[in-house]
Amino acid sequence: MSLFTLLLGGDLTRTPALDAEIADSRIIAADSGMRHAALLGVMPELWVGDFDSEPDGMAEAYARVPRRAFPADKDKTDGELAIAAALEAGATSLVLVGAFGGARPDHMFLHLAQALQLSEQGIKTRLTSGVQEGVPLLPGMRHRFDYPQKTLFSILGFSALSGLTVEGAKWPLDAVEVPFGSSLTLSNVVDGELAVTLKEGRALLVAHLSNDGEH
Image (cartoon, rainbow, N blue to C red; front, top):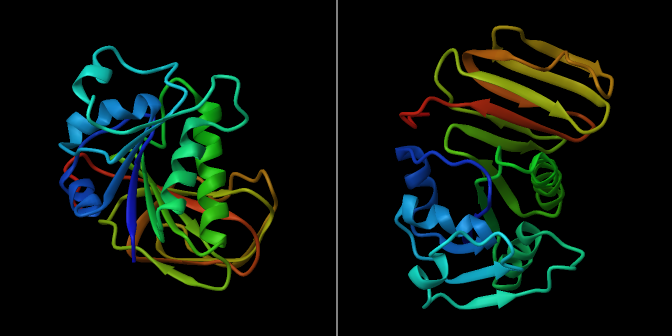
Protein backbone atom coordinates (compact mmCIF):
# COMPACT_ATOMS: atom_id res chain seq x y z
CA MET A 1 0.00 0.00 0.00
CA SER A 2 1.30 3.45 -0.93
CA LEU A 3 0.00 6.06 1.53
CA PHE A 4 0.02 9.75 0.62
CA THR A 5 -0.86 12.66 2.88
CA LEU A 6 -2.23 15.71 1.09
CA LEU A 7 -2.00 19.08 2.83
CA LEU A 8 -5.14 21.08 2.02
CA GLY A 9 -6.15 24.61 2.98
CA GLY A 10 -8.65 23.96 5.78
CA ASP A 11 -8.26 23.98 9.56
CA LEU A 12 -5.78 21.72 11.32
CA THR A 13 -4.96 20.70 14.89
CA ARG A 14 -1.95 18.48 15.43
CA THR A 15 -2.69 15.41 17.57
CA PRO A 16 -0.79 12.21 18.43
CA ALA A 17 -3.34 10.20 16.45
CA LEU A 18 -2.79 12.34 13.36
CA ASP A 19 0.98 12.00 13.71
CA ALA A 20 0.64 8.23 13.84
CA GLU A 21 -1.74 8.15 10.89
CA ILE A 22 0.57 10.02 8.52
CA ALA A 23 3.86 8.57 9.76
CA ASP A 24 6.01 7.26 6.89
CA SER A 25 3.58 8.56 4.28
CA ARG A 26 4.58 10.59 1.26
CA ILE A 27 3.50 14.25 1.42
CA ILE A 28 2.08 16.56 -1.24
CA ALA A 29 1.01 20.14 -0.44
CA ALA A 30 -1.80 21.96 -2.25
CA ASP A 31 -1.13 25.72 -2.44
CA SER A 32 -1.96 27.28 0.98
CA GLY A 33 -1.95 23.82 2.57
CA MET A 34 1.83 24.15 2.71
CA ARG A 35 1.40 26.14 5.95
CA HIS A 36 0.55 22.85 7.70
CA ALA A 37 3.97 21.38 6.90
CA ALA A 38 5.69 23.26 9.73
CA LEU A 39 2.92 22.41 12.21
CA LEU A 40 3.21 18.70 11.40
CA GLY A 41 6.99 18.71 11.09
CA VAL A 42 6.95 17.23 7.58
CA MET A 43 8.64 18.07 4.29
CA PRO A 44 6.45 17.64 1.18
CA GLU A 45 7.96 16.07 -1.90
CA LEU A 46 5.80 18.24 -4.18
CA TRP A 47 3.86 21.52 -4.00
CA VAL A 48 1.04 21.99 -6.52
CA GLY A 49 -1.48 24.72 -7.32
CA ASP A 50 -1.86 28.12 -8.88
CA PHE A 51 -0.20 29.70 -5.81
CA ASP A 52 -2.76 32.50 -5.58
CA SER A 53 -3.18 31.83 -1.85
CA GLU A 54 0.42 31.02 -0.99
CA PRO A 55 1.17 32.16 2.59
CA ASP A 56 3.79 34.87 3.04
CA GLY A 57 7.31 33.50 3.43
CA MET A 58 6.41 30.00 2.28
CA ALA A 59 8.25 30.27 -1.03
CA GLU A 60 11.52 31.01 0.75
CA ALA A 61 11.02 28.47 3.52
CA TYR A 62 10.27 25.66 1.06
CA ALA A 63 12.38 26.75 -1.89
CA ARG A 64 13.79 23.24 -2.27
CA VAL A 65 10.37 21.62 -2.69
CA PRO A 66 9.59 21.04 -6.40
CA ARG A 67 6.60 23.03 -7.64
CA ARG A 68 3.99 22.09 -10.19
CA ALA A 69 2.33 25.40 -11.10
CA PHE A 70 -1.01 25.85 -12.88
CA PRO A 71 -2.75 28.95 -14.23
CA ALA A 72 -5.26 30.68 -11.96
CA ASP A 73 -7.97 30.23 -14.60
CA LYS A 74 -8.05 26.46 -14.30
CA ASP A 75 -10.94 24.00 -14.11
CA LYS A 76 -9.73 22.06 -11.05
CA THR A 77 -9.12 23.05 -7.44
CA ASP A 78 -5.64 22.89 -5.95
CA GLY A 79 -6.77 19.97 -3.81
CA GLU A 80 -7.99 18.09 -6.86
CA LEU A 81 -4.64 18.70 -8.54
CA ALA A 82 -2.85 17.33 -5.47
CA ILE A 83 -5.02 14.21 -5.55
CA ALA A 84 -4.23 13.71 -9.23
CA ALA A 85 -0.50 14.08 -8.52
CA ALA A 86 -0.68 11.50 -5.74
CA LEU A 87 -2.54 9.01 -7.91
CA GLU A 88 -0.04 9.58 -10.72
CA ALA A 89 2.74 8.75 -8.22
CA GLY A 90 1.07 5.45 -7.31
CA ALA A 91 -1.07 6.31 -4.29
CA THR A 92 -3.40 3.54 -3.13
CA SER A 93 -4.45 5.28 0.10
CA LEU A 94 -4.94 8.98 0.90
CA VAL A 95 -5.22 11.12 4.03
CA LEU A 96 -6.68 14.53 3.22
CA VAL A 97 -5.29 16.78 5.98
CA GLY A 98 -6.98 20.17 6.36
CA ALA A 99 -10.10 18.91 4.61
CA PHE A 100 -12.53 20.62 7.03
CA GLY A 101 -13.21 24.25 7.92
CA GLY A 102 -11.32 27.21 6.55
CA ALA A 103 -12.59 30.11 4.49
CA ARG A 104 -13.98 27.99 1.64
CA PRO A 105 -16.93 25.76 2.59
CA ASP A 106 -17.39 24.98 -1.11
CA HIS A 107 -13.95 23.37 -1.11
CA MET A 108 -14.83 21.39 2.02
CA PHE A 109 -17.94 20.03 0.32
CA LEU A 110 -15.87 19.04 -2.69
CA HIS A 111 -13.35 17.23 -0.46
CA LEU A 112 -16.18 15.16 1.02
CA ALA A 113 -17.54 14.30 -2.41
CA GLN A 114 -14.08 13.45 -3.73
CA ALA A 115 -13.43 11.14 -0.78
CA LEU A 116 -16.58 9.22 -1.64
CA GLN A 117 -15.66 9.00 -5.29
CA LEU A 118 -12.10 7.87 -4.57
CA SER A 119 -13.26 5.21 -2.12
CA GLU A 120 -15.69 3.87 -4.70
CA GLN A 121 -12.71 3.57 -7.06
CA GLY A 122 -10.80 1.49 -4.53
CA ILE A 123 -8.59 4.30 -3.15
CA LYS A 124 -8.90 4.23 0.63
CA THR A 125 -9.48 7.86 1.65
CA ARG A 126 -9.82 9.57 5.00
CA LEU A 127 -10.41 13.27 5.73
CA THR A 128 -9.16 14.98 8.86
CA SER A 129 -8.66 18.27 10.65
CA GLY A 130 -7.08 16.52 13.62
CA VAL A 131 -10.25 17.06 15.68
CA GLN A 132 -12.69 15.99 12.97
CA GLU A 133 -12.47 12.87 10.85
CA GLY A 134 -14.46 11.80 7.80
CA VAL A 135 -14.68 8.21 6.58
CA PRO A 136 -16.63 7.13 3.46
CA LEU A 137 -19.14 4.33 4.05
CA LEU A 138 -19.06 1.88 1.16
CA PRO A 139 -22.27 -0.13 0.64
CA GLY A 140 -22.16 -3.82 1.47
CA MET A 141 -19.44 -3.49 4.11
CA ARG A 142 -19.61 -3.50 7.90
CA HIS A 143 -17.47 -0.54 8.93
CA ARG A 144 -16.03 -0.77 12.46
CA PHE A 145 -14.72 2.21 14.44
CA ASP A 146 -12.71 2.29 17.67
CA TYR A 147 -13.75 5.75 18.85
CA PRO A 148 -13.96 6.38 22.61
CA GLN A 149 -17.30 6.25 24.37
CA LYS A 150 -19.43 9.40 24.00
CA THR A 151 -17.68 10.47 20.79
CA LEU A 152 -20.10 12.61 18.78
CA PHE A 153 -20.62 11.49 15.19
CA SER A 154 -22.94 12.06 12.27
CA ILE A 155 -23.63 10.19 9.06
CA LEU A 156 -23.87 12.56 6.12
CA GLY A 157 -26.00 11.22 3.29
CA PHE A 158 -25.12 12.31 -0.25
CA SER A 159 -28.17 10.41 -1.51
CA ALA A 160 -31.11 8.51 -0.08
CA LEU A 161 -29.77 5.67 2.10
CA SER A 162 -31.17 2.16 2.16
CA GLY A 163 -30.60 -0.52 4.78
CA LEU A 164 -28.60 1.67 7.16
CA THR A 165 -27.65 -0.13 10.37
CA VAL A 166 -25.82 1.62 13.22
CA GLU A 167 -24.61 -0.49 16.16
CA GLY A 168 -22.85 0.64 19.33
CA ALA A 169 -24.52 4.05 19.44
CA LYS A 170 -26.86 5.88 21.79
CA TRP A 171 -29.45 5.86 19.00
CA PRO A 172 -28.97 2.61 17.06
CA LEU A 173 -30.60 2.00 13.72
CA ASP A 174 -31.64 -1.32 12.20
CA ALA A 175 -31.75 -1.48 8.40
CA VAL A 176 -33.64 1.81 8.08
CA GLU A 177 -34.42 3.87 5.00
CA VAL A 178 -33.16 7.46 5.21
CA PRO A 179 -34.54 9.98 2.69
CA PHE A 180 -32.06 12.37 1.12
CA GLY A 181 -31.89 15.54 3.24
CA SER A 182 -33.07 13.85 6.45
CA SER A 183 -31.51 14.88 9.78
CA LEU A 184 -32.11 11.42 11.28
CA THR A 185 -28.42 10.51 11.18
CA LEU A 186 -27.00 13.72 12.67
CA SER A 187 -25.53 14.09 16.20
CA ASN A 188 -25.36 10.53 17.43
CA VAL A 189 -23.03 9.36 20.23
CA VAL A 190 -20.81 6.28 20.53
CA ASP A 191 -22.14 3.87 23.17
CA GLY A 192 -20.34 0.56 22.73
CA GLU A 193 -18.40 -0.74 19.74
CA LEU A 194 -19.48 1.44 16.83
CA ALA A 195 -20.22 -0.32 13.55
CA VAL A 196 -22.10 0.94 10.49
CA THR A 197 -23.49 -1.03 7.57
CA LEU A 198 -25.10 0.49 4.48
CA LYS A 199 -26.93 -1.54 1.84
CA GLU A 200 -27.33 1.19 -0.78
CA GLY A 201 -26.49 4.87 -1.11
CA ARG A 202 -23.62 7.30 -0.63
CA ALA A 203 -22.61 8.49 2.83
CA LEU A 204 -19.73 9.52 5.08
CA LEU A 205 -19.32 9.19 8.80
CA VAL A 206 -17.92 12.35 10.40
CA ALA A 207 -16.63 12.03 13.98
CA HIS A 208 -15.74 14.86 16.34
CA LEU A 209 -12.59 13.84 18.16
CA SER A 210 -10.97 15.12 21.34
CA ASN A 211 -7.81 17.22 21.10
CA ASP A 212 -5.67 14.56 22.75
CA GLY A 213 -5.96 12.49 19.58
CA GLU A 214 -6.58 9.25 21.44
CA HIS A 215 -9.15 7.32 19.44
